Image 1: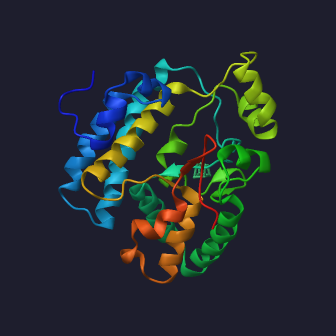
Image 2: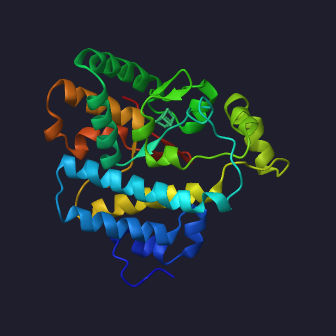
Length: 267
Ligand code: SF4
């Protein structure tokens, strides 16, 4: 059962009253509540963009530490540097995670390379706009931050990227190179899925806890797609209007359900 201190508005009617949904949505309630409460407490100390980056740092550090504690009890995973089969799908992110990625980019790059990255993100966002993760796999559309099979924002990467582990590299490769047949075998139970469930649950729950805390404080608790949102953010960086950005500006990057899959708007 969830503790009585549970304070989130949106989850009260749906997830809280129906534990089946925790499993279906890969949610681990204790992590969700811990991150929700910690983020709420941190928001009382400040809500501007630099505080939101700090909150993203705390959520990521706490969730990484939790996973580090559990890791030895979980199946071995095959993930390693240079393996990037899974980096070809939509990445869901919250506003603080986006600000963390942006702050990492601004610290690491000079003005010229920031402009060149902004251009690359703009071109890439047109390719991924309106596409589900499945469609991106089929088109082999990698993440804009993937270069030579390495994540160029590795230390600032979002929660969803941190929670992706697989027991078998061939499984991830098959999903990218032969998605329909691989998914069909899993549905028919002639093949077993190899993604690790525990880290997925922990990082999903952390992201939802953060999103709920922002909602509770009447801040932007939306879930966006990484490339689409970064395109909008980089335009605001170029125009020096980052402090004026609103959820309306980011609306085209919202992940919405369409025919059972999450996609962004075409823009
Ligand atoms: S942000 Fe990094 S880890 Fe995440 S999908 Fe992109 S390249 Fe992969």
